[in-house]
Image 1: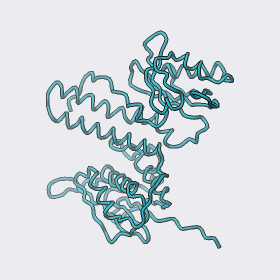
Image 2: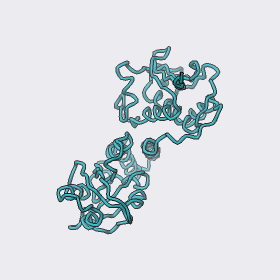
Image 3: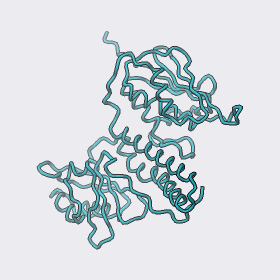
Image 4: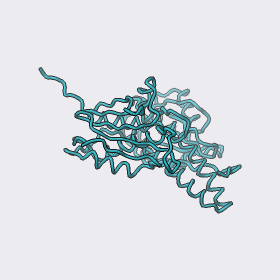
Length: 342
């Protein structure tokens, strides 16, 4: 990789890709003004583009708000504060005031600062807590990588830089997809009876960059009532997890690292296992936590297995992580038993 000594500033994430209100403020003028809002913001507060920050705050702040709370919110919007602020705001039109949490987004230095607005009383879900962090940190690295390769491609014309640029864009798309999956939730399922797990697993395998890994179907898989799209997403995340974190370092005849991922029946459920390095027993519960990554490879978003667990929960399946027969990781899924009524 040719390092660009001074890569261009990273392009901000498109605001309408986010499911919660976001506002951008141009801080260059003496009186900072709102320059960017997304659909979620407009739906709650109207379209204030071009309005000065303090004027917008005055128009929407509840009469009971303290001057200190107002000052804190203005400081966040102007990019002068690193900590969250809380302020009661009136929505556009008729409606009761509600407390909103102003979350500054740590973006690369630039003229526009971005802030997320989320209801204070909302349950602190993994989606809300991770959203600002993902925008601030997880997306910054592939954005910088893409910008550096774009600069190098312009200077050298080497097609390798365009390939790396495309890979960085693919990674950003994955990060955004993972965040939106969590933000929207996996509760709204469209289950179908008798889903063919083998066919869904094969479709999922075809969508993942499996490198030199291979897929094995161990036995006749059960048919389950499931949402095929959500089930495919579950398989995709498990396959990607195995390929990215399970490499054994063994070599094939062509000199490539090899890994086998197996899908099989486990009683009335199914499992996904690999013959990789496995997961230490002390880490097995943590892998489902949002943001948890097992290495510093930079491949994972820290959300993939969190999404797996949420999809399983939505289907009322249990999920357990243990050792595979080959010493790798094995994820087991079983329909939860109906509680006895006697």
